[in-house]
Length: 350
Image (cartoon, rainbow, N blue to C red; front, top):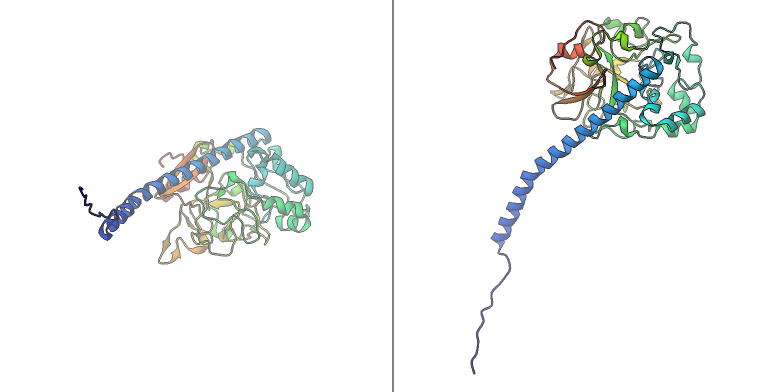
């Protein structure tokens, strides 16, 4: 009889082999993760750009229909409905707009929609029920439900803002351009100042108007050129709405002035608009940064700046409907120029 002897051979990994495999996997993950993050960041930036293109079409369709761009906000404070609410029918939110009007007659103060620039002698907006959002919320539950509803077109995928503000109203990461604060610093201190009216504001949207008058921006009034003037920009980084989402909870909401009254002071941040560039009251750069734990150019001013979570800059919609990515290293003088519609700058150096 022939006998066969077989050696037992172990097929298990040794400890060293296992550690080597783990190390290789860790290295591969380390190499791949930045690439994946870059792809995701690029996709978010492209999606954000597409939102801006939709807003550009909406603004031009609005202008074709009404004869002017929408008001940033009517009235002489920050408590009224914003330009975003006026654009609802133009971003395929007709049903939402109709519900708002049906549930709160007189909800929108819309005399500027006839296309006039100066509408003297109109009804005092303070006497119109529902013209201020806090009043509309208190009076009608249906309105409350609507303006707590997020609108995808108004949200950048890269934004880290909470879905709602401290009152539960749906936020937005896009704000309109009020221009550069070339008006006197004393007038900048409060949007209710008599001389802070829309007719001296130089952006694409007027923020502060008067109780009985409003100034809507027309294409003809953009003498610096629509392709050289910013209409809408990103907002996701300021002192109150920084990466940690700290502050008083006054995040931008698409409806406009929020339930706690909005803002009376432009330096405390506005739910609908932002300032750009250099002015008598201070500088308002793109993407204000933390320096020594303090927001630059200072907490009160940075609340009114544009800023994004995209690396190196932010998307902007210009008056002609084009969308461009502006570097946050842009010269402050050039940044001021693209923020004003009628000051005489026609720079394309950005």
